[in-house]
Length: 189
Image (cartoon, rainbow, N blue to C red; front, side, top):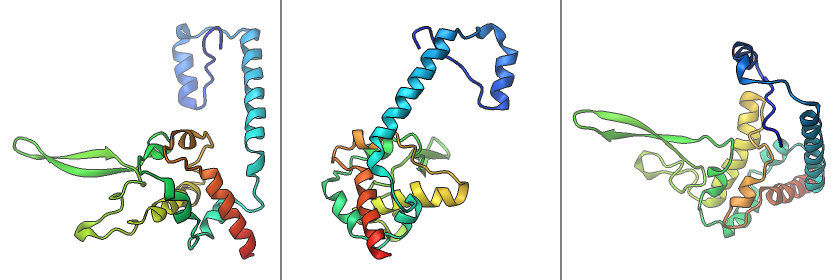
């Protein structure tokens, strides 16, 4: 916005905050509302154009669920350099691991941000690792984004922002992986 920001409450807490602090807010001008509406319309049009080739006959959840044995994952990650940029830049990735750190006379439990694309991500005691192969880690990532979280909470973990595509040093594009998997699912039906 040219004149600042438009604040809209998205919850009861937000509404309460705005009502309790009226001095922090002013009325929004018609010009600002018009600018916001124009920006939203432009963005919606751009999203529709960008995603026109990403319309699937099957839900993404079903595509990913039915691709467990696919070789697409191993093929698509051939250029991956395991930089983890895709998960570090993602606004919905939230994996972490816990470890103990010795302080002077006690141990502290530390929480560290993690990435499912990291080699040791799923490693357990004794050296076992169910996702040692990079393609398996990509499969896990897509299952988490489009299946597990959706099953548990009813929400897709991918917001479609494209940050992972822009940040990935290996040139991996989740959209291309989903397109290839979709073709396999069609063939399998």
